[in-house]
Length: 83
Image (cartoon, rainbow, N blue to C red; front, side, top):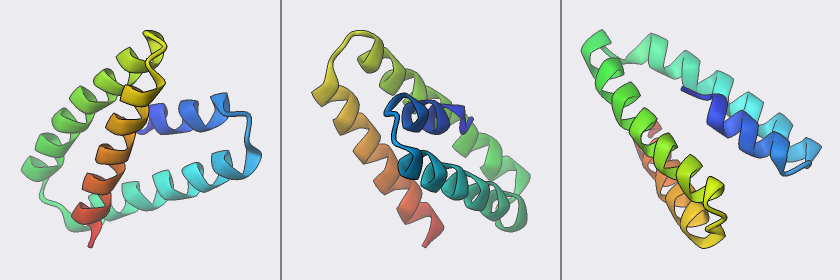
């Protein structure tokens, strides 16, 4: 589920971004395991997978603006979930 974030950060060829992405991925995994009920985890996983597919499609299509928009919305939703 988190592989898209690591792949995008690696593709950017920015080592700092990649490191930050890996740290945030690890923190989000810990948060999910410790705080969310299994049913909620599944619902979030399904939504994240759908969102990641949309982001990946935009990247594959070369639509930077759409990919950026979708990623920004996704990160904002994840941030709200973790508050």
